[in-house]
Image 1 (cartoon, one colour):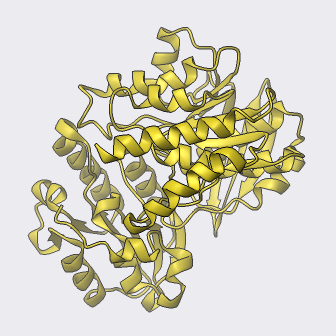
Image 2: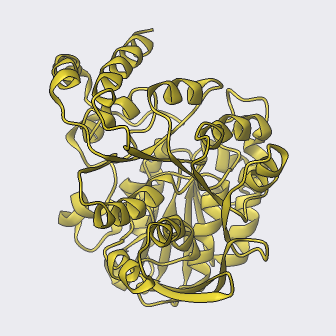
Image 3: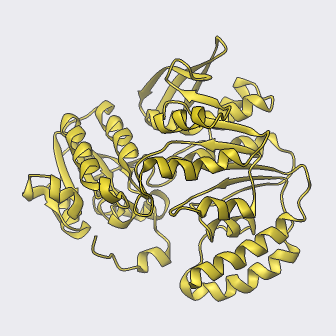
Length: 414
């Protein structure tokens, strides 16, 4: 009840700020099951370079019924419990004094039916980006199709605006056809407007070629894996549409790097290489991360996988599918959480919580191993990376959830 009241209050304050924005203001709205934040960061780079006026790019994952209005009010992180009183008064002050920018780049995150309607009541986008759909956050939805319908409201709200979608995502592709939504598509499918022709992963970068209307463009980003191509393609498309050349877009995207816990590479003890995917997890992002592990040079390849939360009735099936794929890619598997443990037969390497897994991995670290560490936010898999990384003093820069507020939260049973 308190959260609902706060949401309505912050939404009112955000609307006051938006009421002072120019009629020409642009709002790029991003939603999806995974890749939202990385896509937002890439779009933010292009938007800031293209726009001569002020641009607001929402910070972190401030994207829900409280986070979205706080982003519009200029806040950069969610307040801790004791800090909320200051933010409540500060939001009222900002409602009447904060100078709104001309362009907003915002994430729209949902957990329940009707969440998108509330977010759209605060601000509707002029450009919509839909990244991907995965069976996550399903506790409050009857099925994936209902989740897609909720997210698709972001595209349906823009009128004559531009819609950019992941054309490889079957749920989004079918939903747009069903609802007659005209969209610019990107991906590897032959029908995509911007089609990935080829890509190559090497060192610490990924190079790729995309084709649009028979013209080819070549790009390179300082990130490993095809999932980052999908994160930057909406930014490339947006840059192209607003008149930027390929060389200018490439120059801007040279500043794109994965955020902590979203695929950044961390040096580990005993000459190990850690693929740090500890921010969050769902079935699609698990598959993408395991694909990165598959193409990395080095042996042995170790997958340390935590529970995927909020999958509802699909949980056991999706965990089994992830582990089946992991067995094809990894030489060794360590699991964290009761959901993984239920479907993993190796009891020696299956742990109910991160503490047990952390100690096991630290004592069984193998020279030169390539290690993927990934799990949902609640599994706190960054604790494992912190234990085996070469320079723990760099944890605040390289790991997610390093604020005093996060580190003070007790780890709850999964």
